[in-house]
Image (cartoon, rainbow, N blue to C red; front, side):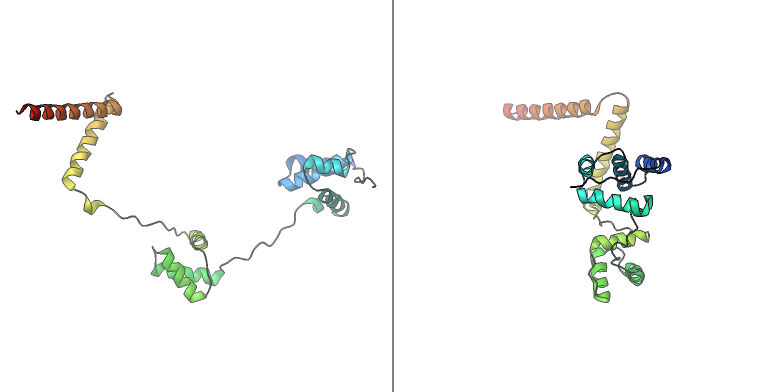
Length: 198
């Protein structure tokens, strides 16, 4: 098999490749420029593919692109990518549906599917709405109506007192330990009193 190398680089081509290798914006460009520089130094395609951990045919393709188009041949061309799931009309319809169902993403999803016939994941809906400065959060139910207000206020007062003592230098663990032992002693006294018949 014949060993293939790129044509010897001129001084300006070498500087261009070195600049692309050291300062290239994308990793792919830096890797391709490195391959050209390695070939100019006398490395074979097999050695270059081993050094860069790529297939042999990829290195060969880079050489051809370099010879035909120069540095432009090594730069990735823009790709179209996937077409968006929602077009401009769908985005407008979503805005209208949000006005009707502002806190119900599932209802919004079902209604959107009914009207447009498009099945769209909730993640896609959230992403589309986020672009228009909407955000959905799960509704949390408050337990405020179920709490004992008197007990709640007493606990808040106790917490404030504990924080105040902690600010004065007593640690929270020490306070809790003291409270536990005080409560435990009271229970023990009560148990002894009951057993002695007092």
